[in-house]
Amino acid sequence: MSKKLKVGDIFYLKLKNQEKYVFGRVLFDVKKQYQKIVNVNNLPSDYFPYLKMFYSDCHLVEMYDGLYDQSNSYDSTSKIIIPRVLTQAIDSKWNILNWGIIKNEPVDYTKVEFPEHLNIMSNIVKLDRGEISLKTNMNIKDNIIDNFNSEMYVPATIAYASLDFQNKRELIPEDARWPEYIKNGDLLYHTELRRKIYNDLNIDPDKSYYELSKEMGFDLERFY
Image 1 (tube, rainbow, N blue to C red):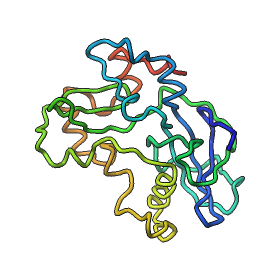
Image 2 (cartoon, rainbow, N blue to C red):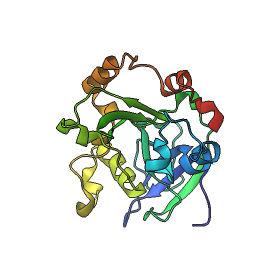
Image 3 (cartoon, rainbow, N blue to C red):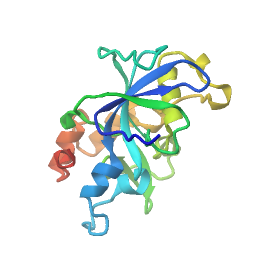
Image 4 (cartoon, rainbow, N blue to C red):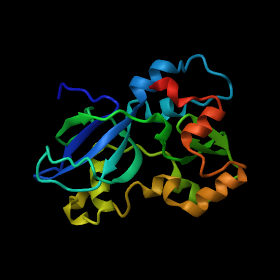
């Protein structure tokens, strides 16, 4: 498709071989926002360009509840069932599903949240969250770390995840049916472990990404 998504655009994804639609919204565009502002060739030594390294062409999206028979059936009262997930861009060649734009709703950047991953860099386990990359005291041999490595999703996987979150797994093609979607790649869904990691770092686990990143010199406002 020739059309391109903008931040704030609410989009639909049509399920493959079915007249069913799910809806989501673009919260952040790594290529159009991050890469235009952050010069990865001129960075402080303590800054790790995590978003560029792992998610250079991705969208941060939220997904809504509901499964609809028509692409124009979006309900503005729909609840958010997936508040944050990074995926290959909805308007990219990686999207095998038909998609379209419903309307645009401006994004409140103070409420934008990024997935929280655990990655090993130079034998150090790091907590990566948007522009934030923090050293932890976790042991690199801890098998649990592998469960939270950065993962690259495609839009179809996000659509199937929204079905899974609504207990509609029977609508997911068998060859694309995973035991679990998204939850194994974001500390958001593992409250006890997440709280322990943040407490060990002496950081309030309830502090928003906007507040924490601003304290660390990465004001999210500059991208919007």
